[in-house]
Image (tube, rainbow, N blue to C red):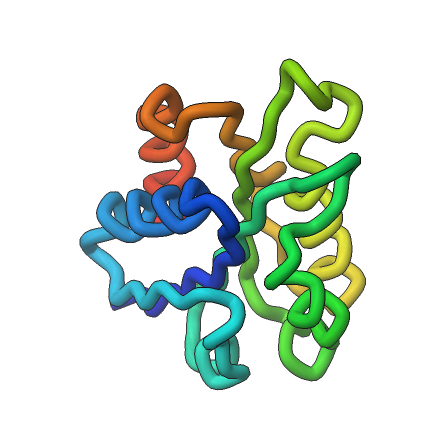
Length: 142
């Protein structure tokens, strides 16, 4: 059974909700979900697949809780690891930096030697309006 670790940063609860939905759609896998503030290196090391999730704040900035984790991402931890990224944002208000956190985390993971899968999931606005997109993303990773 594929072991999946989902590590997220969430301020309003939307990214946490997406993380929980992804877990639900990956029922054939052994999935753990953790807030980035509680994440341990073992969660990455022991996983076959790691999903990082963070919302985008301000003008293309990472969610506050995710910043220290992002700054400590390294090749010792991520080299050769399969990684996918998801995040929430506001396309109408910030089209030019919509879900910039997804891009930032994917680039950092890639720079650390991870095998970044796909372009990431970018959830616009209300999570409930994006259920089909979330399900398709999760199932594409199984």
